[in-house]
Length: 83
Image 1: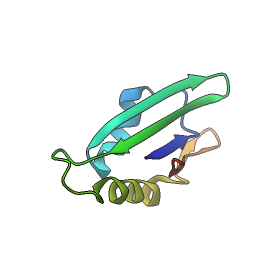
Image 2: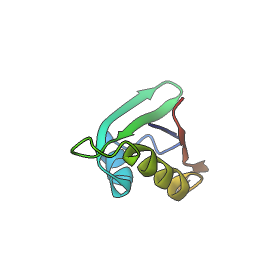
Image 3: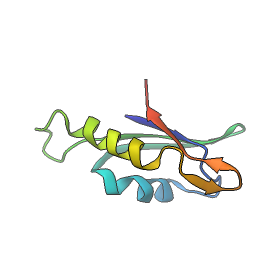
Image 4: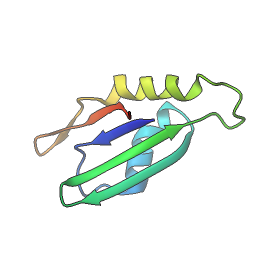
């Protein structure tokens, strides 16, 4: 699972999903907008549930590609493993 924050508050759950779908099959996505800002938690899993490393491989690809990406308005996307 990965934890995502520092993205524009105008993003919706769909927008968040669109950014992270290229890295693998999303099993669950949780999107919250709070007084402190928006954040999301994303879990990847293969459709058949046979590849036990699939989720962590997808998460690592997403972290490497998107963490620190400039999102405008002084926002840099924060993408890390959720612990």
